[in-house]
Image (cartoon, rainbow over all chains, first blue to last red; front, side, top):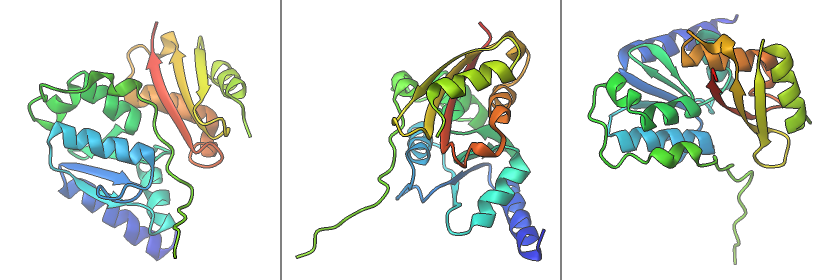
Length: 133
Length: 75
């Protein structure tokens, strides 16, 4: 492991320790770059909890070190109180049955869309083409 | 490029007493959804259950298999 990777791993550990709810994702909450990340962000927003978000795309080592640390192969990854909760599937399921609200310590929204668990994830567009005059 | 049938077969071979239903979400052989039933999930946390399924594929999940959506139950 290079020094750079050690630094990145330490930064990831610190971020997980310092933020009660933290999401590692592709893109940002404003501009998610993957359907699974988008759906997880939407779930956290529906839950009404503040959360920190880290975009793993800018450097391949972030993802590499995160997965080494969490022993979880895919993105997004949600951590609460320093523990890995899971990815999009688990977060969606735990939101629907109220476990996520309990874990985070917020009220379950009255209009929680339980059927969200069945909605297929949308694949993000592989490229964007803009018509220019 | 693995098919949904390949994924199903590998999960059933890799996890004791497992029955799997697998769907290719995009038809592209890289986004799958698997519903896996196995009595060996009993007593394990959801994270552990999903890890057991991911472990069948090692580095392929996040690589050649871009996404593997999982739902696990014991019956």
